[in-house]
Each structure stands twice: as structure tokens, then as C-alpha cells.
Image (spheres, rainbow, N blue to C red):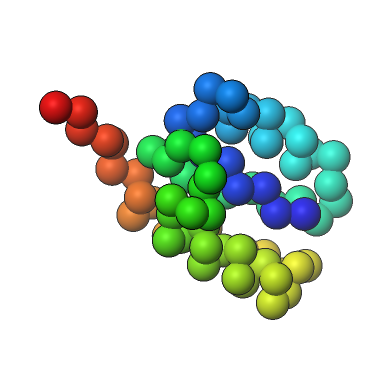
Length: 76
């Protein structure tokens, strides 16, 4: 099971995904730190991870691409 969590989502906070993934033997979690709801739509890394997961659901995902998306949003 792959969980893609948004770091900025009051309706479904990443903490819920962190708790849920524990219930799956092969569960994997990626948190897009400065993304809101609809992670796969808003994050190129999340789309890449989803494709990799669909190709190999039991393979370990390399979530290092999330580090490139760790730039805080600047509101002006």
C-alpha cells in the first residue's frame, strides 16, 4: 500500500497517513512537505513514486525526490 500524504492538509493531515501505514506489512509513505490536498496532482515526485509503485508494488521506493520539493511556500 502506498500512502501519498500532503504536508499542508488540515482535512487529512500527514499524521493520519503515518498511523495508517503502520497497519500494512509492505506499506510505504511519502509526504510532500509543502503540498496541499491532491498530492499526485500537485507533486511531480508523487506522480513518479506512484508510477514506480504500480510497476513494482513490493519494491522499496526511493523517496529522495521529495527533498527537492521541500522549499517552503512564500506568501506575499
